Length: 328
Image (cartoon, rainbow, N blue to C red):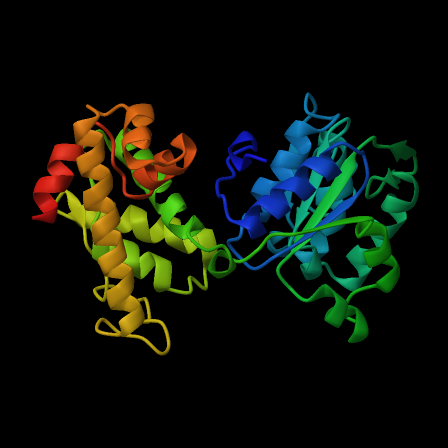
């Protein structure tokens, strides 16, 4: 399966492809989904992929950050309120549930809901009926609910901080988004994709990653996952005055991976491999005049595998000569 077919999801590691396969499966059925994963792993992107590949793709996708809702306003934000229901309720509000009618309601950080709000959500999930705050009429909403959390929700249940019956309602179908450190070379593939986007967005002279940077990206554990990687590439792209982004060991906010430093065997090997790959792929592309299919035949590789190597090192026909000169 090619993960590139999913909305804004990129990667080719077995762990990530498995998650993409699950996304495709759950998108085919109209049931509640619970997504778990660390911060920055792409839980909202996964929810959007489920929505836009599913039966409700023509309906609205309404994201809600439960952790950002004041406890006193959670029910009115979700279910709406009538005019005069409370102080400052000068006009009636339909609520986010109503906005998501015939679409998907995405509840991010659902673990942040208070016990009172959890009870209200549970009642709604039972039959999709609700009442606006200050109103008496029972309303119906045809919505698919997708919830997500970066917390250990099962541990919270045992600690009685999250309702067990609510978890049962939310966890009809489940999906886990893997951490970036579990995804092999996906970090390099993502870094190159971010770099290509910034090159296009800012219309500056093309920039690419130095072999040291590629080695660092492959070795670093990325506790902030994809979001951290994107921010690092963005910042280095804007701050670097050179065409090569070389930031191994120069980022004060990043820690060098445990058990390794700039002279460790693992780091030195990663740099040597990256140097070889970049030079070899660049030379073959140059011989093939930038034709990926011809270059793959020269290298004796499958076209898709060779293309992936070229993308990994940011090599395109227009940058092959520059890359080779920089490697000297």
